[in-house]
Length: 106
Image (cartoon, rainbow, N blue to C red; front, top):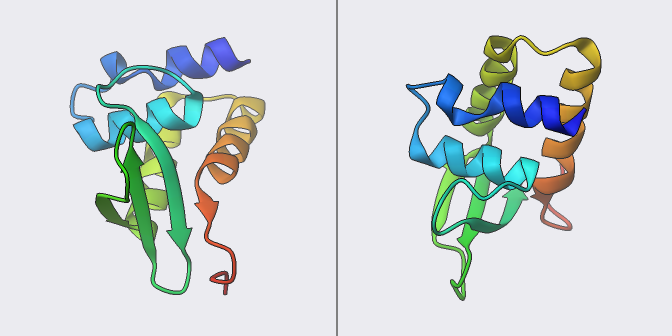
């Protein structure tokens, strides 16, 4: 199933995908589509923010709205034509990789 997710969510299928979203998809799927790659994504639910650390960086150097990121991820899944099982797996991977900062969940 992972190979079909990689194929269906690959940025070559979505010419309007931003470099940031390409990096997020690569991170979630454990692919190497960007340089530098994202090394870590942490979420502060209370602030609705996502903190991003690139490979080789000491601290977090990117911020993104959690709501926007979730909406963009779901729109991508809608556009990709995933099966029900593939969508469940894509959501599971997103939740596993985009981890909530301890103590900030609502």
